[in-house]
Length: 163
Image 1 (cartoon, one colour):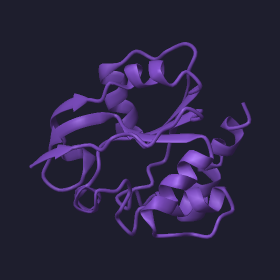
Image 2: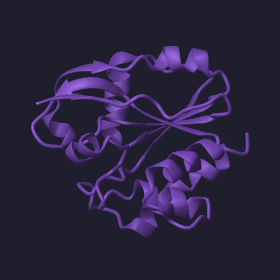
Image 3: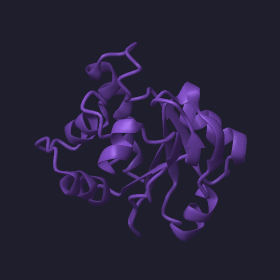
């Protein structure tokens, strides 16, 4: 099945770019980043910013933008059966470096899991002026860490926003 990623959630105040790999089946069906109810991404974001959790996607996007974050995927399109990143074939990368040129306040990139980082490295050289962090995937397929462990790891976001 051919999968195409979404447009980034970003604005002129974004400082930290969070990159996933590619939306899964549920996200594509809902046209929303991290739509699978067992994906911990939104739970982590709302807890980090000490905000009441919401399932409303407009509120979720506002949380990202109000806190100087940006959200996108490393890949623009791919062919994949199911939602597992290990099934990705014939992928094409998003133009992340062009996005960085248009948004010069971004100083850090966080990869939501090792596959997002792997595909980034396949298509791009790291930029010296950008700090890079690979964090545990928030995907339900990553069951090695519990939500509270992921939350502690993802708290680096708060540190990065101080710059």
